[in-house]
Image 1 (tube, rainbow, N blue to C red):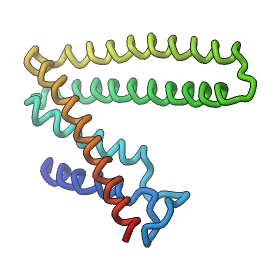
Image 2 (image 1 turned 180 degrees about the horizontal axis):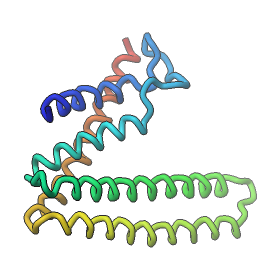
Image 3 (image 1 turned 30 degrees about the horizontal axis):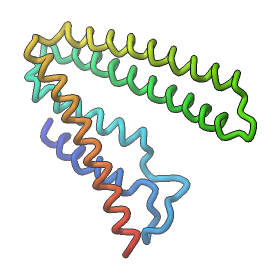
Amino acid sequence: MKTVVLFALCALVPAAVFAQGQPPGGGAPLEQPGVSPAEIQRMFDAYALLQAQDQLKISDEHYPQFLSRFKALQDARRKALQERTRIIQDLRRLASDAQPDETQIKDRLKALQELEARSGVEVRKAYDGIDQVLDVGQQAKFRVFEEMMERRKLELVTRARQANRLKGRL
């Protein structure tokens, strides 16, 4: 069963990234893409969870605990990234004004610093939770695994963008 799900995710994630925002004929991106970035992220997260159990050799007994804690880590990161993106957009808008409001800019910079401190604590707590269900070797493998998955995600996105560029030239 895992193999079927894994195969489906491996096929769907690149296809979804490739198809996102492309109308028939390879013209400009559509306003309403068939697959949202959030859906692609959920597919990749599911793929990562399956890979984690396999690569870290997590027992069936510990997997439910690992699953909930891994999702908490993903959620903490996603929430921080979304909030950071909003603050950066605010800063971009404020800085591009003809007469930037320094008070508002300082407020947003302070909010960014507070977010970075708060999200760092939340991510650290999530890692601590994961580490409670993994032995030391698994903890090390998990850190390496995360880096590998991040690289894999970037490769998929890069390939999808290249394919979109090629399709647009045809």
